[in-house]
Amino acid sequence: MPAAPSFRVAALPMLFALMANAAAQAFTLVVLPPLGRSLGFTDIQTGALLGLSALVLLIAAPIGGTLSESFGRKPVLLVALAAAAAGPALSALVIGFRLNGAITAMAALGLLFAIRFLQSAFAAGLLPAAQAFMADSTKAEQRAEGMGLLGAAYGIGAVAGAACAFAIGGTAPVVAFAALSATVAAGFLAVWTTLREPVPNRPAGMGKTPLSLPRLLPNLTVTFLAITVYGMVQHVTALRLQDGFGLDVASSISRAGVTLMGAALSMALVQAFALRWLRWPATRLMLAGAGVALVAMTVAATTQSWPLLAAAIILFGAALGLLLPGNLASLSLAAGVQAQGRAAGINAVAQGLGMAAGPIAGAMLHGLAVTAPFLASCLLLAVVLAAPLLASPRRRQPA
Image (tube, rainbow, N blue to C red; front, side, top):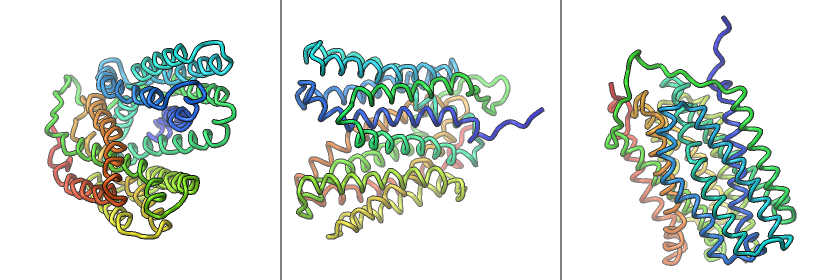
């Protein structure tokens, strides 16, 4: 009998699909705000269109995670990827019709709202099912590396989506949406034809175990605070360059874009390669990541040099490459074999709340002082640094 493939090889179709989906989402976030004006939408209408998906994901992600417990990881992945491929394709049709004058702005807005709602509702199970798949496919000592591969796939996809927006998003948005839809569809086919449902290592006859939220609370706190800090940094970096260093609008946007892309790349590289080399346990990864992130944000809060600010933000991205996979591994080990999907779904809620809170908090704090978001980030990261001691899976591993 041939040996079973390693979890890295077995997960390749899913990782490709996640990367394609992340590219489509990143492209949408970059292109839709300016494109919305060309379609006749107000900035508030476009913002509501983008914010709708985050709200739906908060509600639907736990449902998707729970369904993966009952029906398996692969069926939930396939449904989510089908929705993720259909959304950009249908959006391309609506945008094309509107740009050609075939439909009104309000009709286009209504159709895009419906598309975003359905896409978000049916695709919400993608990340929880993917995290549960990786938990089922890895041993305890491999868990952080496996979760890091998921983060690397999303990070590489986000960079690819931003690059696509930079290259053709402004000149041929319909073609770009269609091409990204085709890429996600290719990921769907790869998962459908080659991905095997994992068989987790669980005792025979074990029934569904209850999910203990107090046991997961330290990990959920880390997810929320770390993503909140990342959201603040993404939102205020260009503003810091403009208001704190006196750069003009074009220069601040350009330099912030390069800096944030560097942070995303450093995060992806750490998740894809460094975790496999380090092979540290989850708690050590969390402590190291939170400590380096705290140092990076301290430098960012106090520096008067924009190159040093850029270096600190890129270092912060690398620190998240240690912290987030370590936290996911710790959460997975604490949840127990029979609750992986449900735990991942609840973690997705914490992540969504952080993504919503970060930009809002960053904007409010920047209004007080240009360094206030970075000083607040230091305080939040100090809390994150203490959380791994409470989140140790060795202390909280259920029977």
